[in-house]
Image (cartoon, rainbow, N blue to C red; front, side, top):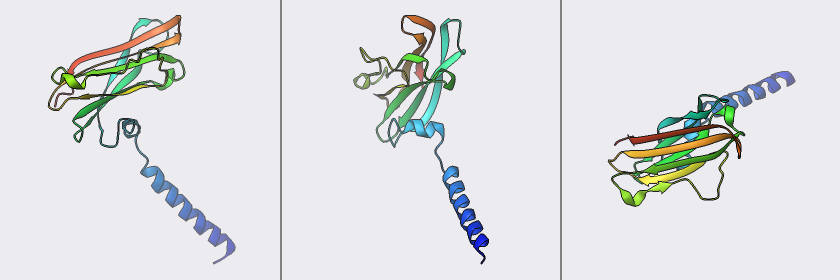
Length: 158
């Protein structure tokens, strides 16, 4: 094999290995679920829609919901859309199971101003629906540009 043939063969092996790595890379939903734990699977997402303010997109972010059959718990995380990353603040998320009161969870921590994501928060909810809330703001504190929120009752029923 010539010197150039050896280099070409090595390059082909490297590209094949890289392609295999990229093909097995986790999706965005899977990457987010790792924040909840390895046993959590994606259930759905709920849009944070603009309720006040003029500037910014109509949808400001999402509350992502996951469930683990191993723990019998739901998990939720609030994240802004890409356009608002770096400009969002006051992110919040909360979960509640009307049936299983002992597992209530609230992601609103007093004195905290979350800017990248809120959560994960958990609630025990085997064979039950959950209620969820989420919100975020844009602009600087004291100079609110827009406020986004979502509130859903009796969703993701098992």
